[in-house]
Every structure is written in structure tokens, then in C-alpha cells.
Length: 140
Image 1 (cartoon, rainbow, N blue to C red):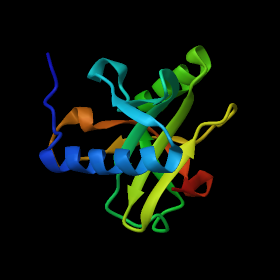
Image 2: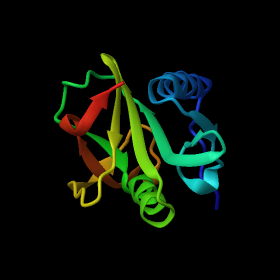
Image 3: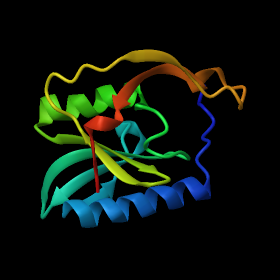
Image 4: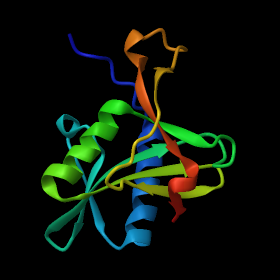
């Protein structure tokens, strides 16, 4: 059974805008990855892959909460790229007050909770997620 995709044209526009900003700020090229990779982009400098990158848009300020969330399967996949392929793992969040980047460091161990969206009536919207501290992010 396949899962319904909720990605809208507005979501894709947010992703594109965040990606362009990230490319300029980090001096690399982002190539979109297929759904089987579970993360949005692979970053390249020249022909060499340097990072696995997930981007997220949040309709809140970075100061509204001490953490923001990322599905645990995405976090684990990024850590896998780091550990097995030697790539940096970045999560770029666009908040109402700017674009911020979390870069995984060996030994990062954040709280894992369970929850998610309930407004769509999709039980698969409820899942484990990791709480990434805002203080661990750098404004791009």
C-alpha cells in the first residue's frame, strides 16, 4: 500500500527558495535526490559530494520554541550518510525570522518524542521525531 503524498506546489516553492539560499550561503550546488534516499538534496562542490541535506519550512519564529523537530527516519538517514559515506549531514530550516542550519556532529544525542500532525486524519503522520535545539543552529 502506498502512502498519499501531501507535497503541494507551495511546498516545492519553499524548498526551491531555501535550496537557493543555502547554495549561496554554503558555496555548493544542491542536487535533488529521489524519494528512495529519504532526504531532499545531495550537496556537491565540483563533482564531489560533500553533504546530505534536508530542508524544512516552519511557520514560526526561531525563538518560539527551544527546539524544532525532524522525523526520526530522516535524522537517522542523515547520520547514516555521515557515518558510512563521510558526508556532512545538514538540516536547513526556514523560520519566519531567517534561515538556519543544523550540522550533525558525532555524538549528537537529542530527545526523541512521538507525535505529529493530526489535522489530516492520517495515522502515518504520527511518528517518532528528534528534537533539534535551536541553539545548535547557525543563521545562514
